[in-house]
Image (cartoon, rainbow, N blue to C red):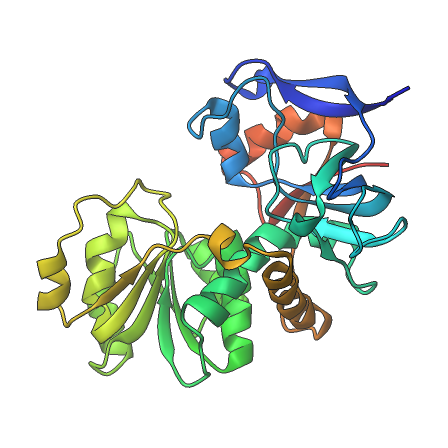
Length: 328
C-alpha cells in the first residue's frame, strides 16, 4: 500500500488560492531515485512564475525546486546515498512543496552536519547561482573591481559576501536607501542607487576611468545598455536573469563599438548538469558557509499549509532575506 503524504498541487494556474494542500500517493523510489523526508523547503520568485503559468508546465503539477531533508529510501542503482543521509537540492523537477518526495539522486547533494536543514533550504538555489557566477562563469581572482546589479537580492547578498571574502571590490546597485545599506552591510565595496544616479558614470568615477572587467546582471532589459557602458574593452557581460524583462535584439555591432565585448547568458542547470559538478559547486558553497564567510538570513518561516500567505508576502515585496516553509 502506497504512503500518502501532504503536498501542494495546482489544478490550474492562478493566484495563491490556486495552491491546494492535498494528500498524494508516494510510491517506492524508481531506479536512480531516492526518497527524501523533507525538513525545510526554500521559496523563490520563480515559484510564483510557475504558479501563475508565466513559466508554463503541464497541469496538474506541484511547485518548488529547493529543499533539504533526510534520505528515507533508495532506489535500485543508487550508490551515492543511503538511508539516514542528510541531503539538499536546489535544481530539481517541480514538486518540492511536499512532506516527502522521490527525486533523481543526481540532482541531490550531501549536506554537511554543520549546516542546518533550514540554512540549506534557504541557500541552495541562490547560493549555487552565486557560486557558478563568481567561481565559474568569470572566475574572480581577488584583484578586480566588479559591478553586480540587484545587490540586495537573494543572490546579490551572497555575492556581496563572497566577493569580499575573495578580496574583490564589488560595486552593487539597488533601488532604495535601505537596500543599498543592506548590500553595504553584506560586503559591497560601493553602492549605486540606479533610480537616482547614472550607473555608468558612477562606475567610471569609482574605477578612476578604468571601468570593470565583468558585469553580473540579473535584471535584464532595463539595465542592458548601461551595463555594456560599464565594461572595459574585451570585458564580459554576464546576463543571468530577466527581472525587468528579457533582453532582445542584441546588436553585435554595438559590442564591437564598445570594445570587443563578450556576452554570455548562463544558467545554473548548465553549470551543475552532473552529480559531480553539482556536488563540487555545493561543496564550495558549503565551505564558505562553514568558514563563516557567507551567511544566510532567514527572514520568514511559514508552515506548508500557509504557503498562500508566503507567496503573497514574496510577491508583495514584504520579505527580507530568505523565505522557507518548515515541516515538523
